Length: 217
Ligand code: HEM
Image 1 (tube, protein in one colour):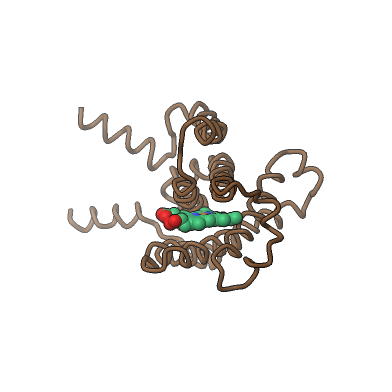
Image 2 (cartoon, protein in one colour; image 1 turned 90 degrees about the vertical axis):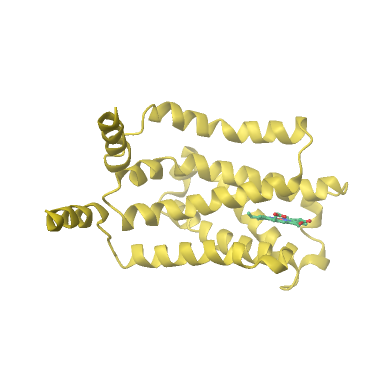
């Protein structure tokens, strides 16, 4: 029993063979229409969408550098394949959050974008609005037509995920003044892992573990 469980873990974590992976990919893809449905048909708060969108965005930002830094753990490589689906989900949640705030006040987000009262650096909404606009651009270009249209520029557009992440972090830090750590930790984690991946730092977890076992023998 234990042996087959260890084998299962080995298959999933080390070899990255996640059971029913293609079904899982489809399920994750179906989450964004569900989120829209939930917003309109279940009385949900725009704040919850912001929190959930931020959590999914952190995961999307972390997964690629994590997979590069820990190449032994093939599960991370498999999860990188789900990045597009989770990215779309994060984007839709963020759009609902941004739209939901103004909607709750009977205002229109697309008119409020031009409201000069938000356009100064100390205002949390400036960073929120910038995040929203980037999210919209990323969502509109996350399809095959845009890949073909933009060609090599498509990847550059996708890099806007980094300003989106940092602008969102500033927005959240400004609205949740007393809870800066909530933002600081993910920002630090993404920055450190991004730098490690960029400088091709690789941490071989399994080899170290094997060496440890040999030393004990
Ligand atoms: C037009 C754009 C946006 C507007 C108007 C907006 C508005 C707000 C407001 C008013 C709050 C404070 C809620 C409260 O505590 O009473 C808030 C919180 C928050 N926003 Fe935004 N936001 C926008 C964009 C974004 C973006 C791009 C993100 C990125 C993920 C985001 C994530 C969050 C998060 C995580 C919170 C904290 C929720 C909580 O735990 O209280 N927002 N937003």
